[in-house]
Amino acid sequence: MGVIRVEKNRNYTVMSNYHLRDKRMSLKAKGLLSYMLSCSDEWNFTVRGLEVVLKEGRDCIRAALEELQTLGYLVRVQQRTEKGNFDKIDYVVYEHPRDIAEQEEKREGIEKPELSPCTENPSTVKSKAEDPSQRNTKSSRITKKNNYQKHNLSVEVATDLIKEQIDYTKAVEVYDMALIDNLVDIMTELKCLSACQEMIRIGKVEYPSDLISRKLEKVRWMHIEYVVDCFKQHTDKIKNIKSYLQQSLLNAPDTIDAYYTAEVQHDFYGRG
Image (cartoon, rainbow, N blue to C red; front, side, top):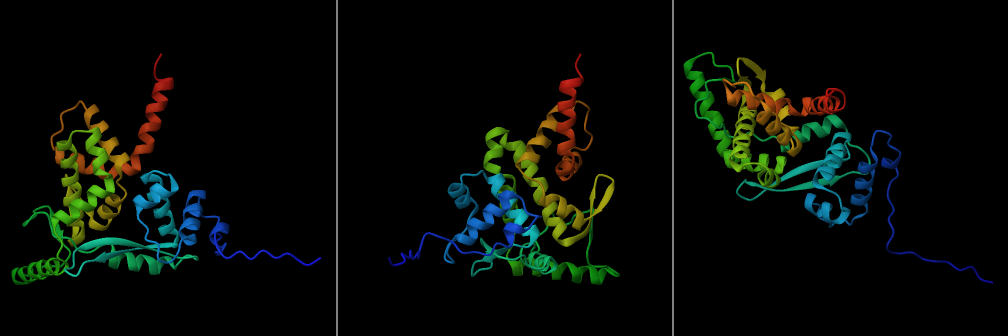
């Protein structure tokens, strides 16, 4: 009897199993990367598209993408239009992790373009360029202005990025739009200033702009919810509301877990 051979030429996937054996990766990150590697080269990835196909929420998809990016399996490439405006973001996926240092260099060059400042003459910031004389100060300001014009960026662009980051549509469905807009404005201002200033003053303390930028990038919808809830529960008079909200937004990713853990412990053990 002859040998029966089954020739499979479609509906199966051949991929490297390197990521499947990567002990650093979570199951959701391995699953997402496996799916993305299984798609054809012509496939265009969007967060919304992945939500629909994989039946997962936006937060889950974004968390997996961020994990892949941290581990070097994914690089986000910000595309621009012919006029230099922001366009779609391309996701470049790799079977093996890229060098982390190389990836960070690409991210700084692509994802962190300079943004125009939110105030024409901010009094609470220090310029990244040293100003040994009034003449040099003027020259430095002109150079920065031209640089912003070169990138054709505006506060509106920064606002759109912040709104996408915090899931603005969902936020205004739950809370008052005016309050959410105020938080967006505060985050936008910090984002703009951190792109072109060395130090940023919040309240009576000056912080490195790099630190502000890193903290700001961590803020998501859950942190907005946390900040608003804490703000509503605050009974003492707040002397400087803007400074209070700035600090609350920046500290939210670091304090949210401890806060809700304390709330749970209070519910269980704090009541007689």
